[in-house]
Image 1 (cartoon, rainbow, N blue to C red):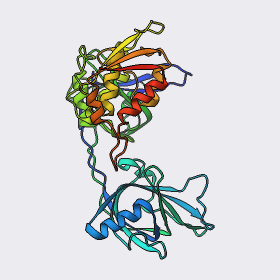
Image 2 (cartoon, helix red, strand yellow):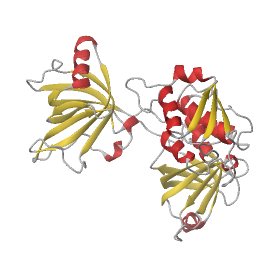
Image 3 (tube, rainbow, N blue to C red):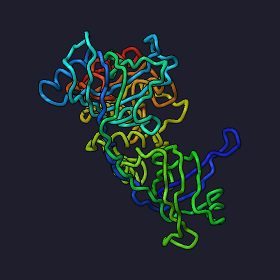
Length: 391
């Protein structure tokens, strides 16, 4: 079986109930189409900072990237509404034109192109096409990535809307149905709403490679050619970002079980490294036995630390061996340092080929989740009593 659907039981802290085990899938590991880009007009703006600079750049030489843009409603006194329930977000913003940059003495209208929603279009389904401005409101305060002050505007208009791209529904094939899903199939229901479930990818032995919580609706089902009593399910899911081709590549690499040698992730792309990181979090074979005494010195292979994911993967293998996990960011690494996760400070970390990370890591403009600079990583380890030896 390659996929499993489980639901939570009514028993407090009880085991999850398996409702489907499936042999294969169709249209499951796919790269989702890019979200639609719409054209908006911010009216009555007093632009500041990066927004004013982007307007000047667009007027001088064409569309100018801005990054993220958040609009926070202002009450009739010009004060941001609290709590911040009326916040509206755009992502991947490009400024197309507008009034003169720095026109603080008179309002201007700014035309832009963007994706509706948060980073990469998240939460777009929960937002209106344009933010509403009820009579008590006076407009919006504009902020950018990192809460940079971009000024204010009075109104937002949608002036050109692209159709949202179609997403092929995934199908789980050759499924053995159990519990409520089996009962629904037996009763002849055309569709069935499972609600919140855990959808897992499994290896050859049935061990979880990756698991995600999602709201799942069975849009249709039919007897499967895989055998008597088997069913093919066509699904509608609330979350789809874990179904990428990058995840499919990694899950195929883990099909025979966790890796037995280090650095198999090294040639992978950034998206594939992210999927590998998620697989390591479920790799119980690489987790240390609680209470075991950690080694005083760990060796970090730095040859492939070209991004933040590479740093986390190399650190996980330095501490817990091939396929090991020891956090994916400062927050989770800090947690691992304080728990029975394979290494407790104080200990020594010998960082081999550190020059690669020194040259590659660091923040770049207009990007999200950029890797921390090399010096910041060293300062983090020093603050947590990890002695880093550069080799």
